[in-house]
Length: 347
Image (tube, rainbow, N blue to C red; front, top):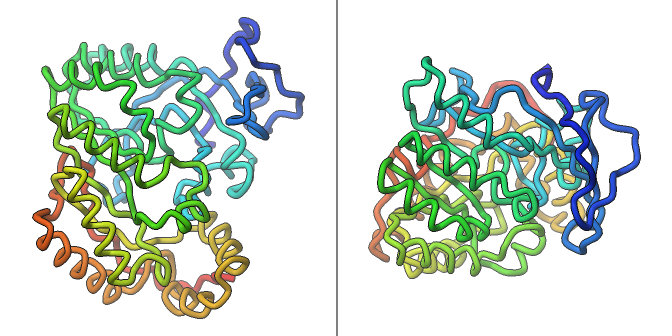
Protein backbone atom coordinates (compact mmCIF):
# COMPACT_ATOMS: atom_id res chain seq x y z
CA UNK A 1 0.00 0.00 0.00
CA UNK A 2 1.29 3.46 -0.91
CA UNK A 3 0.34 4.85 2.48
CA UNK A 4 2.25 2.42 4.67
CA UNK A 5 4.83 5.15 5.32
CA UNK A 6 2.36 7.17 7.35
CA UNK A 7 1.66 7.05 11.05
CA UNK A 8 -0.32 9.19 13.45
CA UNK A 9 1.26 12.19 15.18
CA UNK A 10 1.14 12.48 18.93
CA UNK A 11 -2.04 14.16 20.12
CA UNK A 12 -0.88 17.53 21.44
CA UNK A 13 -4.32 18.92 22.06
CA UNK A 14 -6.88 20.56 19.85
CA UNK A 15 -5.95 23.76 17.94
CA UNK A 16 -8.12 26.78 18.55
CA UNK A 17 -11.52 26.42 16.92
CA UNK A 18 -11.09 22.71 16.33
CA UNK A 19 -12.88 19.68 17.67
CA UNK A 20 -11.65 16.12 17.16
CA UNK A 21 -13.78 14.22 14.71
CA UNK A 22 -15.52 11.04 15.72
CA UNK A 23 -14.18 7.66 14.52
CA UNK A 24 -14.27 5.49 12.51
CA UNK A 25 -11.03 6.37 10.79
CA UNK A 26 -10.08 5.11 7.33
CA UNK A 27 -8.71 1.58 7.54
CA UNK A 28 -5.42 2.72 6.01
CA UNK A 29 -4.95 5.40 8.71
CA UNK A 30 -5.88 3.60 11.93
CA UNK A 31 -4.05 5.99 14.26
CA UNK A 32 -4.50 9.33 12.52
CA UNK A 33 -5.75 12.34 14.46
CA UNK A 34 -9.01 13.44 12.85
CA UNK A 35 -10.18 17.02 13.18
CA UNK A 36 -13.09 19.17 12.11
CA UNK A 37 -13.18 22.97 12.31
CA UNK A 38 -16.09 25.19 13.27
CA UNK A 39 -15.67 27.66 10.43
CA UNK A 40 -17.88 27.99 7.31
CA UNK A 41 -14.97 27.37 4.96
CA UNK A 42 -14.40 23.91 6.43
CA UNK A 43 -18.03 22.87 6.86
CA UNK A 44 -18.48 19.15 6.22
CA UNK A 45 -14.74 18.52 6.00
CA UNK A 46 -12.50 16.23 8.05
CA UNK A 47 -8.72 16.52 8.24
CA UNK A 48 -6.60 13.48 9.07
CA UNK A 49 -3.30 14.60 10.56
CA UNK A 50 -0.48 12.12 10.02
CA UNK A 51 3.27 11.95 10.46
CA UNK A 52 4.86 10.97 7.17
CA UNK A 53 8.12 9.03 7.10
CA UNK A 54 9.22 10.55 3.78
CA UNK A 55 8.13 13.56 1.74
CA UNK A 56 10.31 13.95 -1.38
CA UNK A 57 8.88 11.38 -3.79
CA UNK A 58 10.31 10.06 -7.03
CA UNK A 59 7.92 10.16 -9.99
CA UNK A 60 7.41 6.71 -11.56
CA UNK A 61 9.54 6.23 -14.64
CA UNK A 62 6.51 5.58 -16.84
CA UNK A 63 5.12 9.06 -16.15
CA UNK A 64 5.52 11.47 -19.06
CA UNK A 65 6.10 14.62 -17.08
CA UNK A 66 9.11 16.99 -17.14
CA UNK A 67 10.14 16.45 -13.53
CA UNK A 68 11.44 13.54 -11.47
CA UNK A 69 10.77 14.56 -7.87
CA UNK A 70 7.71 15.92 -6.09
CA UNK A 71 6.54 17.09 -2.68
CA UNK A 72 2.87 16.62 -1.79
CA UNK A 73 2.01 17.78 1.75
CA UNK A 74 -1.71 17.01 1.30
CA UNK A 75 -3.89 14.22 -0.11
CA UNK A 76 -7.43 15.03 -1.11
CA UNK A 77 -8.41 18.56 -2.09
CA UNK A 78 -11.14 21.01 -1.14
CA UNK A 79 -10.94 22.58 -4.59
CA UNK A 80 -13.41 19.82 -5.53
CA UNK A 81 -12.64 20.04 -9.26
CA UNK A 82 -14.93 17.56 -10.96
CA UNK A 83 -12.17 16.41 -13.32
CA UNK A 84 -9.20 16.12 -10.92
CA UNK A 85 -6.97 13.28 -12.12
CA UNK A 86 -5.70 12.62 -8.57
CA UNK A 87 -9.10 11.43 -7.33
CA UNK A 88 -8.30 7.75 -7.66
CA UNK A 89 -5.37 8.07 -5.25
CA UNK A 90 -7.91 8.40 -2.42
CA UNK A 91 -8.99 4.82 -2.98
CA UNK A 92 -5.55 3.72 -1.71
CA UNK A 93 -6.76 5.02 1.68
CA UNK A 94 -10.03 3.07 1.59
CA UNK A 95 -11.80 6.35 0.81
CA UNK A 96 -13.83 7.04 -2.31
CA UNK A 97 -12.70 9.10 -5.29
CA UNK A 98 -15.77 11.34 -5.19
CA UNK A 99 -17.09 13.18 -2.14
CA UNK A 100 -14.39 11.76 0.16
CA UNK A 101 -11.66 13.24 -2.05
CA UNK A 102 -13.27 16.69 -1.70
CA UNK A 103 -14.06 16.50 2.01
CA UNK A 104 -11.54 14.18 3.69
CA UNK A 105 -8.04 15.62 3.43
CA UNK A 106 -4.84 13.99 4.65
CA UNK A 107 -2.39 16.47 6.18
CA UNK A 108 1.29 15.55 6.58
CA UNK A 109 1.86 17.78 9.57
CA UNK A 110 5.61 17.14 9.72
CA UNK A 111 6.23 18.01 6.07
CA UNK A 112 8.58 20.94 6.73
CA UNK A 113 10.80 18.98 9.12
CA UNK A 114 11.00 16.09 6.67
CA UNK A 115 11.93 18.29 3.70
CA UNK A 116 14.83 19.82 5.61
CA UNK A 117 16.02 16.39 6.76
CA UNK A 118 15.85 14.86 3.28
CA UNK A 119 17.54 17.80 1.59
CA UNK A 120 20.42 17.40 4.07
CA UNK A 121 20.86 13.69 3.30
CA UNK A 122 24.19 12.89 1.56
CA UNK A 123 22.36 11.01 -1.21
CA UNK A 124 20.32 14.05 -2.24
CA UNK A 125 21.87 15.82 -5.25
CA UNK A 126 19.82 18.98 -5.45
CA UNK A 127 17.42 17.93 -8.22
CA UNK A 128 14.49 20.09 -9.20
CA UNK A 129 11.36 19.45 -7.10
CA UNK A 130 7.85 20.07 -8.43
CA UNK A 131 4.92 20.90 -6.14
CA UNK A 132 1.21 21.03 -6.90
CA UNK A 133 1.53 18.06 -9.23
CA UNK A 134 -0.97 15.80 -7.46
CA UNK A 135 -3.30 17.94 -5.37
CA UNK A 136 -3.00 21.67 -4.77
CA UNK A 137 -0.56 22.55 -1.99
CA UNK A 138 -2.33 25.93 -1.69
CA UNK A 139 -5.82 24.56 -1.19
CA UNK A 140 -7.92 26.05 1.59
CA UNK A 141 -6.41 23.88 4.34
CA UNK A 142 -3.02 25.52 3.83
CA UNK A 143 -4.38 28.71 5.38
CA UNK A 144 -4.75 26.85 8.68
CA UNK A 145 -1.92 24.30 8.60
CA UNK A 146 0.76 26.51 6.99
CA UNK A 147 2.85 23.61 5.70
CA UNK A 148 4.31 25.49 2.74
CA UNK A 149 6.38 28.21 4.50
CA UNK A 150 8.74 25.74 6.22
CA UNK A 151 8.96 23.74 2.99
CA UNK A 152 9.98 26.81 1.01
CA UNK A 153 12.36 27.91 3.77
CA UNK A 154 14.12 24.55 3.61
CA UNK A 155 14.38 24.69 -0.18
CA UNK A 156 15.74 28.24 0.10
CA UNK A 157 18.30 27.31 2.73
CA UNK A 158 19.59 24.43 0.60
CA UNK A 159 19.42 26.50 -2.63
CA UNK A 160 17.33 23.73 -4.17
CA UNK A 161 15.42 24.55 -7.39
CA UNK A 162 11.68 24.02 -7.34
CA UNK A 163 8.42 24.86 -9.06
CA UNK A 164 4.84 25.33 -7.92
CA UNK A 165 1.67 24.84 -9.93
CA UNK A 166 -1.50 26.06 -8.23
CA UNK A 167 -5.01 27.42 -8.48
CA UNK A 168 -4.66 28.93 -5.01
CA UNK A 169 -4.22 32.66 -4.44
CA UNK A 170 -2.83 31.85 -0.99
CA UNK A 171 0.50 31.51 -2.79
CA UNK A 172 0.77 35.31 -2.50
CA UNK A 173 1.11 34.95 1.27
CA UNK A 174 4.49 33.34 0.69
CA UNK A 175 5.77 35.88 -1.83
CA UNK A 176 8.57 37.16 0.48
CA UNK A 177 9.87 33.60 0.92
CA UNK A 178 9.60 32.91 -2.79
CA UNK A 179 11.66 36.00 -3.59
CA UNK A 180 14.32 34.91 -1.09
CA UNK A 181 14.43 31.44 -2.63
CA UNK A 182 14.68 32.90 -6.14
CA UNK A 183 17.85 34.72 -5.12
CA UNK A 184 19.69 31.43 -4.58
CA UNK A 185 17.89 28.90 -6.81
CA UNK A 186 15.66 28.68 -9.83
CA UNK A 187 12.01 29.05 -8.85
CA UNK A 188 9.20 28.44 -11.31
CA UNK A 189 5.64 29.58 -10.66
CA UNK A 190 2.64 28.55 -12.73
CA UNK A 191 -1.10 28.95 -12.44
CA UNK A 192 -3.76 26.62 -13.75
CA UNK A 193 -6.48 28.59 -15.55
CA UNK A 194 -8.44 26.55 -18.07
CA UNK A 195 -11.18 29.09 -18.80
CA UNK A 196 -12.52 32.41 -17.53
CA UNK A 197 -16.26 31.74 -17.72
CA UNK A 198 -17.62 32.40 -14.21
CA UNK A 199 -20.67 30.14 -14.48
CA UNK A 200 -18.57 27.22 -15.66
CA UNK A 201 -16.05 27.86 -12.88
CA UNK A 202 -18.76 27.69 -10.22
CA UNK A 203 -20.05 24.43 -11.69
CA UNK A 204 -16.82 22.52 -12.24
CA UNK A 205 -14.26 24.05 -9.82
CA UNK A 206 -16.46 25.13 -6.89
CA UNK A 207 -13.76 25.19 -4.20
CA UNK A 208 -11.16 27.21 -6.09
CA UNK A 209 -10.54 30.94 -6.25
CA UNK A 210 -12.25 32.40 -9.29
CA UNK A 211 -10.32 32.65 -12.58
CA UNK A 212 -10.24 36.43 -12.17
CA UNK A 213 -8.63 36.13 -8.74
CA UNK A 214 -6.05 33.73 -10.16
CA UNK A 215 -5.33 36.18 -12.97
CA UNK A 216 -4.87 38.93 -10.39
CA UNK A 217 -2.34 36.68 -8.64
CA UNK A 218 -0.48 36.17 -11.91
CA UNK A 219 -0.28 39.95 -12.28
CA UNK A 220 1.01 40.44 -8.72
CA UNK A 221 3.67 37.76 -9.14
CA UNK A 222 4.69 39.23 -12.47
CA UNK A 223 4.95 42.68 -10.95
CA UNK A 224 7.15 41.12 -8.23
CA UNK A 225 9.61 40.02 -10.91
CA UNK A 226 8.60 36.40 -11.54
CA UNK A 227 8.02 34.93 -14.96
CA UNK A 228 4.70 33.17 -14.50
CA UNK A 229 3.44 30.53 -16.89
CA UNK A 230 -0.17 29.48 -17.22
CA UNK A 231 -1.28 25.92 -17.77
CA UNK A 232 -4.53 26.40 -19.69
CA UNK A 233 -6.03 23.21 -18.38
CA UNK A 234 -8.19 21.45 -18.62
CA UNK A 235 -9.97 22.63 -21.73
CA UNK A 236 -13.38 20.96 -21.55
CA UNK A 237 -14.99 19.57 -24.72
CA UNK A 238 -18.27 21.29 -25.46
CA UNK A 239 -17.84 23.68 -22.53
CA UNK A 240 -14.65 25.67 -23.02
CA UNK A 241 -13.16 24.50 -26.34
CA UNK A 242 -15.02 26.91 -28.63
CA UNK A 243 -13.22 29.82 -30.29
CA UNK A 244 -14.92 32.42 -28.10
CA UNK A 245 -13.83 30.75 -24.87
CA UNK A 246 -10.28 30.19 -26.09
CA UNK A 247 -9.96 33.79 -27.25
CA UNK A 248 -11.31 35.21 -24.00
CA UNK A 249 -9.09 32.99 -21.85
CA UNK A 250 -5.87 33.60 -23.78
CA UNK A 251 -6.55 37.35 -23.89
CA UNK A 252 -7.05 37.44 -20.12
CA UNK A 253 -3.90 35.40 -19.50
CA UNK A 254 -1.86 37.74 -21.69
CA UNK A 255 -3.32 40.82 -20.02
CA UNK A 256 -2.33 39.43 -16.62
CA UNK A 257 1.32 39.43 -17.69
CA UNK A 258 1.92 35.68 -18.03
CA UNK A 259 4.98 34.77 -20.05
CA UNK A 260 3.55 31.61 -21.60
CA UNK A 261 0.39 29.59 -22.00
CA UNK A 262 0.35 25.81 -22.37
CA UNK A 263 -2.97 24.21 -23.38
CA UNK A 264 -4.03 20.78 -22.21
CA UNK A 265 -7.24 19.01 -23.16
CA UNK A 266 -9.29 17.28 -20.49
CA UNK A 267 -8.21 13.74 -19.71
CA UNK A 268 -10.31 11.40 -17.60
CA UNK A 269 -8.50 8.76 -15.62
CA UNK A 270 -10.34 6.18 -13.52
CA UNK A 271 -11.92 7.81 -10.49
CA UNK A 272 -12.09 11.22 -12.12
CA UNK A 273 -13.82 9.67 -15.12
CA UNK A 274 -16.78 8.34 -13.14
CA UNK A 275 -17.17 11.48 -11.00
CA UNK A 276 -17.02 13.82 -14.00
CA UNK A 277 -19.41 11.62 -15.99
CA UNK A 278 -21.96 11.72 -13.18
CA UNK A 279 -21.76 15.52 -13.07
CA UNK A 280 -21.94 15.85 -16.85
CA UNK A 281 -25.00 13.62 -17.15
CA UNK A 282 -26.76 15.66 -14.48
CA UNK A 283 -25.85 19.18 -15.63
CA UNK A 284 -25.09 18.84 -19.35
CA UNK A 285 -26.83 15.66 -20.55
CA UNK A 286 -26.80 16.83 -24.18
CA UNK A 287 -22.99 16.52 -24.16
CA UNK A 288 -22.92 12.89 -23.05
CA UNK A 289 -22.86 11.44 -26.61
CA UNK A 290 -19.94 13.68 -27.55
CA UNK A 291 -17.93 12.55 -24.52
CA UNK A 292 -18.77 8.93 -25.18
CA UNK A 293 -17.31 9.38 -28.65
CA UNK A 294 -14.22 11.35 -27.59
CA UNK A 295 -13.28 9.10 -24.66
CA UNK A 296 -14.51 5.77 -25.96
CA UNK A 297 -10.98 4.33 -26.05
CA UNK A 298 -9.53 5.56 -22.80
CA UNK A 299 -8.52 8.53 -20.67
CA UNK A 300 -7.39 10.80 -23.49
CA UNK A 301 -9.25 12.48 -26.31
CA UNK A 302 -8.10 11.54 -29.84
CA UNK A 303 -4.78 12.96 -30.94
CA UNK A 304 -6.45 14.80 -33.83
CA UNK A 305 -8.70 16.66 -31.40
CA UNK A 306 -5.78 17.52 -29.14
CA UNK A 307 -3.66 18.80 -32.01
CA UNK A 308 -6.48 20.93 -33.38
CA UNK A 309 -7.18 22.38 -29.94
CA UNK A 310 -3.50 23.13 -29.33
CA UNK A 311 -3.20 24.82 -32.71
CA UNK A 312 -6.11 27.15 -31.99
CA UNK A 313 -4.66 28.13 -28.61
CA UNK A 314 -1.26 28.76 -30.20
CA UNK A 315 -2.79 31.01 -32.84
CA UNK A 316 -4.59 33.01 -30.15
CA UNK A 317 -1.42 33.13 -28.06
CA UNK A 318 0.63 34.53 -30.94
CA UNK A 319 -2.06 37.12 -31.56
CA UNK A 320 -1.72 38.27 -27.95
CA UNK A 321 2.08 38.13 -27.80
CA UNK A 322 2.42 34.89 -25.85
CA UNK A 323 4.80 32.14 -26.85
CA UNK A 324 4.19 28.47 -26.17
CA UNK A 325 5.51 27.25 -22.83
CA UNK A 326 8.73 25.27 -22.94
CA UNK A 327 9.74 22.49 -20.60
CA UNK A 328 11.27 23.78 -17.42
CA UNK A 329 10.35 25.38 -14.16
CA UNK A 330 6.98 26.61 -15.34
CA UNK A 331 5.58 23.09 -15.46
CA UNK A 332 4.96 22.87 -19.20
CA UNK A 333 3.61 19.41 -19.89
CA UNK A 334 4.47 17.16 -22.81
CA UNK A 335 1.87 15.94 -25.26
CA UNK A 336 -0.26 13.27 -23.57
CA UNK A 337 0.32 9.68 -24.66
CA UNK A 338 -2.00 7.99 -27.15
CA UNK A 339 -5.25 6.69 -25.71
CA UNK A 340 -4.98 3.10 -24.48
CA UNK A 341 -6.54 0.42 -26.57
CA UNK A 342 -8.93 -1.01 -23.99
CA UNK A 343 -12.56 0.09 -23.96
CA UNK A 344 -13.75 2.11 -20.97
CA UNK A 345 -17.29 3.08 -20.15
CA UNK A 346 -17.93 6.79 -19.58
CA UNK A 347 -21.47 6.39 -18.27
